[in-house]
Image 1 (cartoon, rainbow, N blue to C red):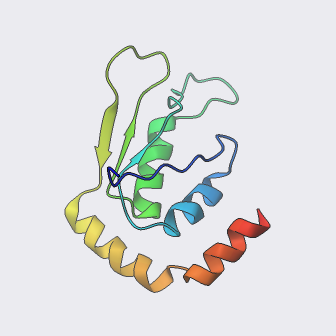
Image 2 (cartoon, helix red, strand yellow):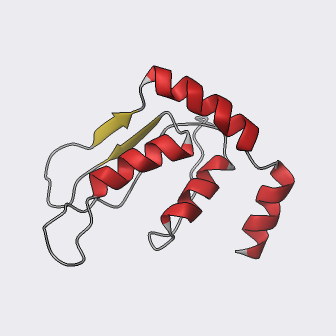
Length: 109
């Protein structure tokens, strides 16, 4: 056992579902398998890096490894700043759903 757990999660889940899912797990680094989209200025464009920063702040994970769509370089890692991390950890712990609530949510989904 290498101590690494893998959880498959749909690319089509909402942002809120992803934050809730991550809050049910112990805080650990996350790797996104699908490249982040770049804002192209179109009507339905989405800035993946802005969404990633928001996910990093709201989920409480220490870091997220990702790649950008169309990029041929190595994956990049975004890390939360320590001061923000400590404050978020405290607020996450008080708002963290108990394991029973997480189990009910996963069975319902």
